[in-house]
View 1 (cartoon, protein in one colour):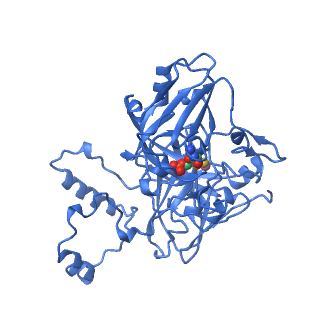
View 2: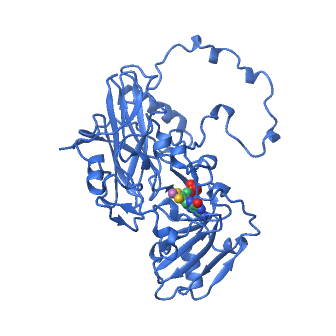
View 3: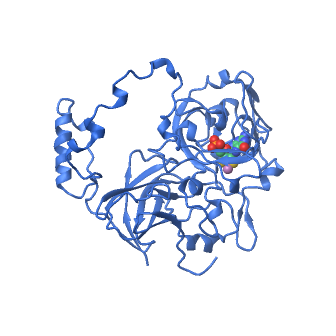
Length: 448
Ligand SMILES: Nc1nc2c(c(=O)[nH]1)N[C@H]1C(S)=C(S)[C@@H](COP(=O)(O)O)O[C@H]1N2
Ligand SMILES: [Mo]
């Protein structure tokens, strides 16, 4: 039996600016933080010491003694050179002998908030990254279930009213090598086949209502113009719900790696449906058109049967701090520390995340922080004191469709270990006495 206990009033109090008048904002902020520290249960990451013994603050900094770069030295901004390790990474386990049909994984251990910077968004290409002159780009919307077939230029497309929405994209192969046991002592390589962005474009519903659909419009084929074309079948019901045709990514044009100039966003569903370098949408009454599609992205079950369509990325979560790349080796016994992570569900909205420190026997509720949006990354946080003892730390997310993240035992009992896709079992980190963090798997039943 698994017990769930709730946290007491341990959480950091937050103040909302709009409740305070501008005039006394700073005064009240100061008063608040004093009160919070007095409560003693809040995170105080540094032990206060006399400021005078730190030369880094007492001496004049070298960068302050001369002028910096002129403002025009870098007209498209780059990260600080000190951030050179915060990059996408590839792994031979995910490539088919080359880097054209391959993946570059997102450094989610470094990610902050709920969107991924464009230069760090994970990349999954089947035929390399295409580079398209936007003047040459066209989108055809056609098929036997379309009233008025059209071909759009980029300017035409942008005449439709636009929307901006935050959604994650996750390749359903995220975590695929871990079905039989832990593979990577790394968060980036275990869960880096996902990212999130604010997408800008037009709701596909707007276009489909404009061209008109016939009464048997049930299936949509989406195809890219790259070497792989990535044909995928998507139900018209989903297309009319929240699918977007986008050209914007986090306030600028899509990056080439994300399908410049235009891609499809299919919120919460398998990454492969989010067709990049979009070329054509065909609406039909028939379920599929492409041989390639029927041979891929199925869910293999025990006994060898496969589920053909399994679209939704299930409820999931992972602790991003600590993680193998962000261990607790700098902490001392008794330090207060924030455990932080990302939860997501393709069904709807995250409603809660539980944390276990003992490998899943006992759970406490974490706090959701920041924006909690449907089909988006949701940040969770749990502030605790570490007594220096080893831990088995895990997170378990829930969503508003009543889904709860399964244990490894539950998942492998239900679907076996033959599948590649849709692995959403609870992830456990082992924290050692030295504060090292290792990727481990907890199996209570001997099985699988
Ligand atoms: N045209 C085209 N679209 C594509 C792909 C592709 O190779 N070609 N890869 C798909 C897969 S498998 C995934 S997981 C997502 C990845 O999107 P990203 O590269 O922007 O992260 O794009 C999908 N769309
Ligand atoms: Mo994918």
